[in-house]
Each structure stands twice: as structure tokens, then as C-alpha cells.
Image (cartoon, rainbow, N blue to C red):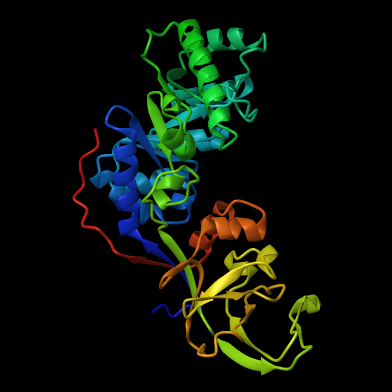
Length: 381
């Protein structure tokens, strides 16, 4: 039991299980990039990387140099791909980790060129296309400036193109099918403009939902993040959520009917009740918007959060859980006994994706790792 008021419990065995399940779905011909950005979605690179290495995963996706540094420090010798456009200073600092950079357009290519000159060597790059309509950092193929841009890239000594990439904006099968078709055509045309032999450049656009729902989106490589951690809307039975957010009941008191609850008197008891204080608040990454709408688990029973939670605490109505007492485990996300609070529950209560919450929980609260598999690393090429 943790001595802190809140902690995240990471089930390492669930991550290993999910990786095996995903690989079984993908088959043996599609390369898997294990996405460990945002400190492995809050689950911890230190937890996830040994599992990936033991399974022989030879490409990982990161966003920060800190993540790349930890991967190298932990013995990962495979490829590291940055999954966003980087600042010049990041590219220069990240050169020591041999990061493959995501090229976010013509102006960004100039930034990467300057960084490569500073490093004194070419930078391996993946060109982003706006084939799927995300309109974030990809070049729009219909823009008349796109082809001259690609020709400049082809002539560059500083940028070595190794891949062409994109990213889907929607978890919708029809949208993914259309985007994958457009990407395949545009990536092929870009490959010809770059003067690369057909099939030489690695093409990738699918993340967890697309890769597991629309096989034609897989191309040469897929970038799997959410599914590793058991959180995807793809219809893949057997995935196991790998995180629990846990605390304990700090205090319980009875209050009469009509009592108002918490800041702004946001809650009110219709009848006599028992209210429990849980030492978790928005400073711990539990979104304030969940106050009055989310539930937690106490003794395997759902109990509603009834206040507009504070910085370091929230209030739960346990009137219907008469056995609840001080010190009882409280699960705010994950399983307790046969009951479970899922990502979908957090999303309904908050109005946003669960990852916006659990990536913060894992980085703001201590981690307790359980069910650790025995990992014998497979050397990465």
C-alpha cells in the first residue's frame, strides 16, 4: 500500500498481453512502432520499454528529447521517431540520440536543414502529407507549392528522407478508408518526385484505431500507442486497461438533509447522508469538470463525486455504502473487484478523451508497478 494520498497502479503484465494481442491482429508483415510519448501515456517509459525490447520492437515513437534520452539510457538501440514537428533547438540537442524527425512543411524543412548544418551531418526525416485532412503539419498535395517543396527536399544534402507519413483526424472506419486511399496515392506520387525507387521509403499513417479496424491503412508501419495501454475504440476483444488511479477514504461524516456540499454549494443532500473525503483533487490531475458527474469505486460499489472538487480533495456520497470506512481503497479509474471505471465513463463525465486525464495522472502521481513479466530483451538491430 502506498504512503501517498493517491497513486497510479500500472499493470505491466497487461501491457505485455496487449502487445501480443495487437501483434496477433496485425500479422507478421507490418512493422510496429511502439508509441511511448508523454512518458508512455503516463504509464512510464521505464515500465513499457523493457516489454517492447523483450518483444523485439525495433522502432519507438516519442515527442521529447527526454524520452529519447531515457530510451537510449535503458539500452534501446533501435530507431527513434519523433511524432511531431520539432523546434530547431530540439533537433540539435536530440542529434546525440539519433532521432528521425517529422517534417512539418516547407518552412519547417528549412529549420531542420539549419539544424543539420549545425550538427554537421544529415538528419533522417519523415515527410508529413495532409492526405487525411488533419491540416496540422502535413503538406497539402493540391497546393501548387507542394511539388517544388518536394524537389527541394530531394536535392537537399542535409535531409535524408526515409519515410512518408500522415495522421488520421477521426476514429471512423469510412473516414480512415478514404484517408488511407488518398495517402497511398499521394505518398506514391511523392516518392516518384523525390526520385526514390518504389517501396524504398517507409509509408505510415495508422495509429491504434486505424491499424486495428481498417487493414488497408497499415502500409509499411503502424504506430501503436493507445492499444498498448488497453484504451482504444477499435473492436479488439481482450485488451486490458493497464492503469488504475487509486486513493483511500481519509474521513467520513454524517450530514443532515439539506446540507450543501463543497465549493459554491454545488451539491445538496436530499436526505440524511454520509459523505467521504478522498485526498485527490485537480492538482493531482483529476479534472474539476468531473465533480458532480463522475463516480468512483468504494468496496466494489459506484459512488458519485458530489462536490465541485478542490485542489487536493473531493467528496463522495457513500450513503448507500454503509460498510464504507476510513482507510478503504477508492478507485477513480480502473477495476475494483468485479466493477470497473472505464475510459468511456471518464469521457462521458468529462466531455473529452480519457487520455487527457490519465496521461496527467501517471506523471503527477507516484507509480506502483504490479504483475511485472520476466523480460529477456531481444537485441534491436
